Amino acid sequence: MTLITTQEAAELRGLTKSAILKAVASKKYQSCYVKGKGQGGKQLRIALESLPQEAQDKHYGIQRQKASDVYWHLTEDQRQLTAFKHCRVLEYKKFKSEYPKADKMVAFLKQYNEANPANKPLTKRQLNHWEKLYDRDGLKGLVDRRGGHNKGETTISDDVWDYFKALWLKESRPSAQSCYDMTSHYFNDIDIPHISAFLRQIEKIPEPAKIFYREGKKAYQDKCEPFIIRDYSKMYSNQLWVADNHLFDVKVVDKNGNVFRAWLTGWEDIYSRFVVGYTVNKISPNSDIVLDSFARSCLINGIPTGVLTDNGKDYTVYDVFNKDFPMSVCNEMNIEVTRALPYNAKAKPVERLFKTLEEKYCKHLPAYIGNKPENRPEKMSKPNKKLVNQSMPYNEFIEFVENMMKTYNTTPHSSLDGKTPLEAYKGGFGVPMRTVQNEDMLNMFLMRTTKPLKVGRNGIFIKAIGHYYDDERLLQYRNKGASKVYARYNSEDVRTVYIFSEEREFICKAASVELSDYSKPVPMESIRELQRKKKARKKAVREQMPDIDVLSVSEYVEQKASRYENIMSDNNVIQMNPVIHQQAKAINKEEKRLDTQNKASKRKTKEREDALYKLFQ
Image (cartoon, rainbow, N blue to C red; front, side, top):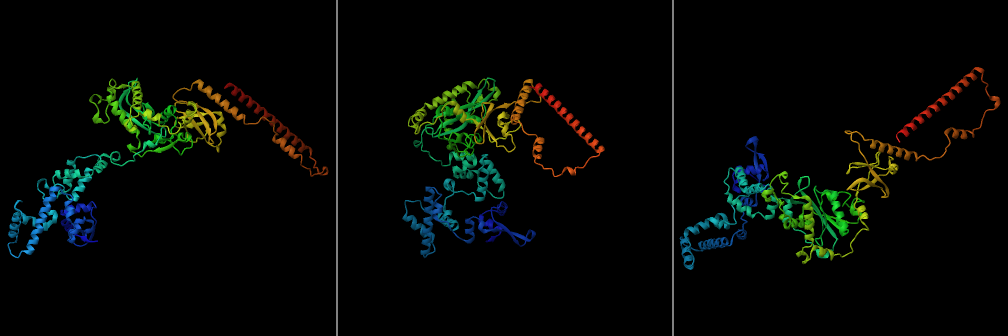
């Protein structure tokens, strides 16, 4: 590694020492400290290898510049003029080496001007100036930099341009003037070119780079990235449906006076561009809305072989289009799932449908608000509460969307060889349409499914609904080590759910357990219902006890004791004295009394429990 002083680096770069120190502070150049006179007994040194190649060559006296390198960035006029100067300088140098007398320049000019009478005479001043420029800067020095002749060249140093470009290439899109002012402030110890030079350099920045840094990643992907060109001719109807959500650029108002923008969740057949189904909603899409729109599409147009969705949580929820969950909709209906590339508009062709609907139809509605704030009509630039009269009634908008979809499906497309999407869809079935036997069967396929659930005292709790569901047939699953259960339900009616075992066998239909609100009195009907459930549960518990007679433990041990053999003989019996005999009789009498008393107490307790049980029936 070759180390040089800051002064040497400044001379090689054509900058001030202060500019070099700033570049070192920003770690643009490699540097280190060596022992020597200075602050702390050390001096700063810069690695020559970290400087631009041009500065390294200048240090070693190497001229790497070739004529082709200079000509590459010049205009045609610049090339011709530079080549003319270059030839004259080389001719003159050769003439000087061969001409023996002292008046070399005078003789050369006289010879050249006489040989080229049609050209403008070459003067001594011109030739002398060109030779000095060539000796100092090489071919680059012969480029005319006056007026517009320096097009293609710049006097902005690399350090200054890099600093300006780092400021300008931001998504906040700062103005060139503000970036120029900040650059001038940073390099306040050197003279930098006029802002017009920076504006010319900006034009040379590749357009993709401008879009990526000043408009964002999505704009870059949409406008600049290459994409796969699909061959739809080899596909067939219902082979692949694509889904997406869209927020209409139209203000609507419901019957309660609420002003909002409606959402569309739509499904399009990729082969035919036919809109197979959709839903319009007041709220932003969720997994239930996605499933509802898919169900409507399947009910009318059969079941697709595959679907293409984005990576939003509305589509990736575990029980809808998720291949990893055995009971998900796509697994139950044998549908392949493909995910689009994130933030890539070209990955989901349905987005072109949304653009067509807005451009061709929605823009003509009086309640259209534009796709950007700057495009919003003046009459619609008001808060929602002041747009009640200008907004389109929601029920009318729903009818408009229905007619708009029918119009789209029956309009010829150039990409379909003049066919309408409806015609292409009907005539494009390469395989028979997949359908279900009836609507009830389809509803079973499209039910939401929970993850495995434990059965507790109040049955199962479904977090997505926020309710408990219970049935006495779940009793056997309340054991600590029992297997879990699944619940399937229709999101439009959550009063009951269907319970299945982990082996996917049907267990029961469970009803919602009504929750009590502590802020309100509990109605008598709820108490009666609770007592009915308690009675039913106790009955179910009692039914677990078989109705048979079994030996009491006393009878059991008595029968077992009959096998016992007495090892004592009558001759060995010890006779009790009268006092001990009386004590034994007293103890035996007390034991019998206590036994009778305990039985009476148990009988009264049972009678009291039975009375309470009858009271709450």
